[in-house]
Length: 605
Image (cartoon, rainbow, N blue to C red; front, top):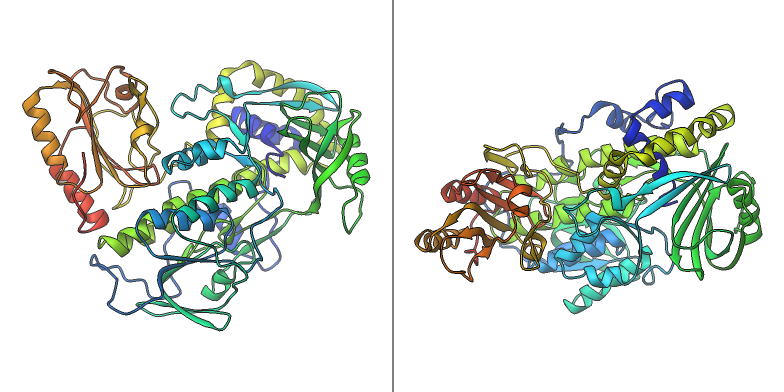
């Protein structure tokens, strides 16, 4: 279903719950829960954005600050189960950190169906940090706007060119098929010498205080940790004894990738709402192939015939549309579920193994990739540099609340856009043109909708590993927030430096540095872990060791508003700020890094 209710995303973000109140006359329900299921409703109702749940892992979870890498033999350090986007990304990131990996999947080979299609800005930023953004962009179509139709009539839309998203190079949604995203990651793994072990099924899993023991067919494998990226029916999750509470939505949908002939162009994403029906058009490959989706009110079963989809689509869109040359057709029903623990001892869950939800807003694949980015460097820190094993607990503490908010958000969108039978649907159609028209005319909804959907505003709460040391300015990213892009000068940006999926230490000085101060600062930063950068104005000739600032954008975006302002940032491999001080306190930074990643290697400047 992908981006089925981006329209509603904008409406909710712009006008809060007023649409839901106008349409339903009552608060939006949060979830369909089966009788006897308690976990998901408790999750949706009982946790706030910045709360952290207590953990009760089902296996021992050491918390000593010393490395938990005992001198016992293993076949690999991390076993990744599942070669979808989340598993492929987990393996790719671990390899970059020098961790030995095995990646298995019980399928015969890579997926051939397109499946998910929306690649959000935060995901493209992750691919950029790996040097893969260009390859990813070559597989997709840039979409910067959405047009909304009520009963076939266009009533307004979103324009991401108006989102004022200067802190990302990617102010759009990339329409790229999931199977082609996977091909980019498979190629990267091949270049790093790792092949997926297809037709390899995980049969059983046990763990003790030092290792995980897995049976793969007739083979016994031992590893330090296991990552379950094996989807909604995850064997890893079941073997770890973790719950997966929730239920399926009552409504079914019809979907096809095919040729579309109709009165409109093939370049713009379009949403059609018509009573209890909803239709979707996504541009994929010009007039050759597009994705269409609609509500399934036919009551049919079995394989989906294109003429059945065409008839239902015409009823939803109320425009003449003819379908042909199908590449993929399916009928499906979405579900909403989440595990209450992302970690159990030496086992972890990422992607659909941890959470599934309404595909409203195009969040699923992107969220799984960000799960992987959050987890991989933490595993490497414990395995490679003696990081505190409690750092691994922070994976659940940071990503579980994100999953909760995701389920809430997508559930609300789904229910307002696609779950309004009878009178409620007719009321939506009556009032939506006015509200969408107002939204289209105002600048704020475009900005808020883009930032929420792109995931660039996702942030983590303070913890021992997310610290604001000393803040004079409330501007700029705080610890836990994403580090934004910003121009430095001569075509150089912050994202040009934050590459390689590694820890970065960034010293910024709006106060001009003389030669002696620069030399001393570089020497002190060289003793820290990570890759160090000095971004500054200088009171001497250009120093090649310094990123010389030619525009104030980088200072303004990172909170250095005073002429003599300075700051020191630690930016994690996943692109979030781990530590910030509004002065260049190298000793305090060193103390934090030791707490974060143990004994580490010197930085390079």
